[in-house]
Length: 482
Image (cartoon, rainbow, N blue to C red; front, side, top):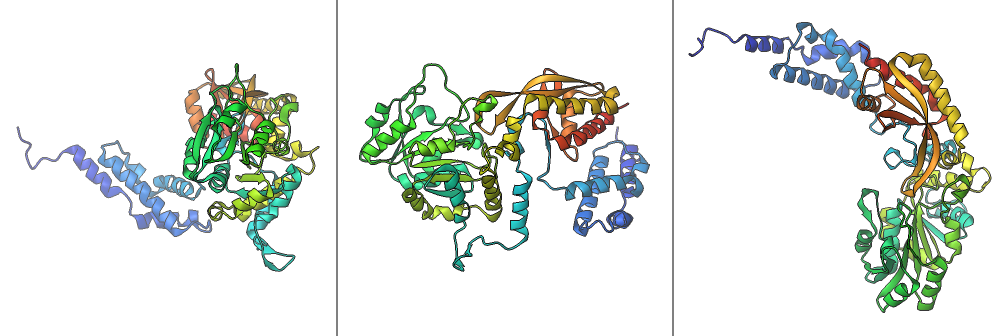
């Protein structure tokens, strides 16, 4: 039976009434004037936020959602407008609290820089500098010379060059020394790191041709020697910093590979990946070759990252013989891969700290977190626990637990650092909901979920973050109170 045209669908009528009740943009902007005046918020941001919220309200009404008439009043919508304005104004790159226990966390910015490095970066950015001006001669200078002397002093290398990351360093070295020629590398060293960076792919982009030798677990000097031919341009060694092959294994030492290269007139390169200037085995970690040791072995070119175990800003550092590094510097790719004044300022500041080897594990945050005794981590954890039990005991079950932290950043795989964590079992919300809420805080907190508990590993939480962390946790737990 057809509905009479005189009869009106009540639901449709309500929707139309609600749509007519949505306030106009200009009215909302006028109501917001007192809240945003003097805040420095651009008018375009305020208007865009208002339009977004009103569009969401309109869409909800059209979708048939229940709407309380009072919810369409401007006063009722003001908190939504302000929240959206705040969201639009908030930086996309934000500070977080790292409670994962992963020290060099690739997703969380890798190495934390010390205050001295940040001061140097601020100075370089807020004033003019001698980035490419030689103060001695009064003529155009080279930005690369600003840290080259320091790098050579600290490592024993003849020459140095810094590009924007280690993948770039590997690329430009291969393109300079082996384009159109063969590069011999052990099959067990054809690594892939985060972001699908693969040695064979980078080699292909450089124009070099890969020649694999040996087996996955064992490569001998004779394998390299048998692979050398008229088209060979480089012998390459890749340090396996992000995985381990254990058991029945064998690899060729740097000294033997360098001796072979000398006999056959071929340069030898080692990609260290996560290079370190300090022997970390004294802190209970497995012995890793330091940059100084690799340079001393006679390798012609060494590449490594600046923002991993070195503890500096993102950079790809190239060390080697003066002849080869000079050739790399003249490669046109160098212009595309060069670093800016901020990286230079931060890197120089970090390198200067290495001049004091007795205190460098205290002054560089990455090394300090690795070197911190577990007793110190335990005191930090107990301090957080006491505060949480005082301000949020009725919302969650808190306890202490032994755990393990990791160096991270593709360095020292499967090597654990003893650590202490504060564990949480919320009373009124799930662990996954807690993790989600913490990610959306003004200063997000990133932890771990293990054994149906939320863990806050205190090795990667700074002393001056404990109060902020506790207050953030208490606020989030209180959100879910009935």
